[in-house]
Image 1 (cartoon, rainbow, N blue to C red):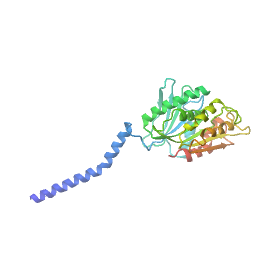
Image 2: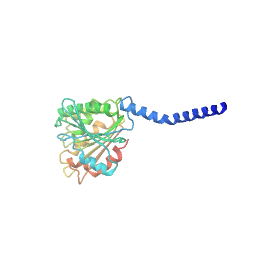
Image 3: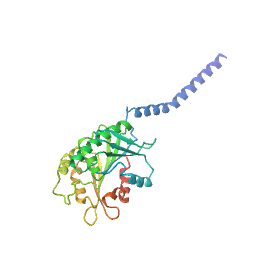
Image 4: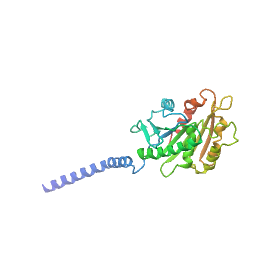
Length: 274
């Protein structure tokens, strides 16, 4: 009888041990989720695409753009952020559970044109990304800027970006006037000279696509392609890869560029991947 009780005890102990071993992955995942939620570690799977509109554009600038992308692939969450002039963030939308590639639009209360405002907006972008990283704990991002949005991102990367906080993998600028409305590569504006000089501070591992439209007059109706091409002096030699792309024909006007199907395909293939 005593022998049988010993066997039962051993079997019971074995069952308990097996059960505990089976629960280890669950405990590990729960602990990992806790670390991500509390900001102890980054969520390495979360790679949002940051969308920055140009001057006079609102947080709704990319609505059609996102709809076009969602028709081409799995639908992703859309979060919209407005940064006011007191550095406060108004956030609408949420990232759905399990969505590792959400879109986050960052717009500005001060959305005026001009170099002085672009400087302010790049600072607002830095404030927004710092707060969003703390909120969502992402470890890296991709970024897309339309028109002056590309200038804002570029200046942010040169003046405020800290690679120790999170990584940036890929950047696409669309119809970005690196030399404002100059139709030729020279003369260079003060902004272009400043950004070219600071180009050495750009993330060296970054992949950049610069896209511009060109109709019969060599512009997209607002931005000359030569101004888009002026970005070469900022990026080439300072980042890992730089590609300049010209689109023509239908939907190559400045305001239509983000919904241009050729650009959408490039974004799907090269930007919206880790």
